[in-house]
Length: 234
Ligand SMILES: *Cc1c(COP(=O)(O)O)cnc(C)c1O
Image (cartoon, rainbow, N blue to C red):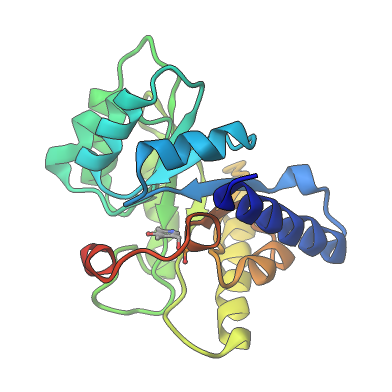
């Protein structure tokens, strides 16, 4: 077993044990392997250990790996912040976009999505901490954006994404996840029928699962730590 395969097993066990604690079925949580800065052979390695869903943060890098790994049946999610001049490539090559935070981006994705492809799954990113450097709409802006995105063709609005602020306080992190869950519940009370909470990473996936995460985005715990140069790019 390779190192990546062993780490993948360990992450799966963490997910299972959090699901047990939350009285949830393990199949209700999708493990999205965040493969930004990770080489195509390492992704192939994870594939041979049963991993199918991968998340990329940089358009160019992601498209190159998607092309290189086209012989595998993989699900590709775009998890990074998206600039409007990159929407065409993302709409052509990915199945999901996790960080829609303005209508302009959603419109461009809808315009670019080919009608013969399945609808593009999208989540709205919510910036709950109010950090000015981070993308995402505020909690108060979510409902209006959700309604507008939902009205667009060729997109399927699935739910919400968040990344809590960096902190050593696990209660704060869990509180953010709870906030996102309540926001989703409110939207669903208004009839939006959303089924996705994309939240939780290597360090906090358990808290996210306890608060209802349906997609956890895990990089380091599967592929090892990224280099300092890579981190600077994020
Ligand atoms: C890098 C990244 C992750 C994974 O973070 P880890 O701490 O390495 O698990 C998850 N989500 C997004 C949006 C990221 O950019």
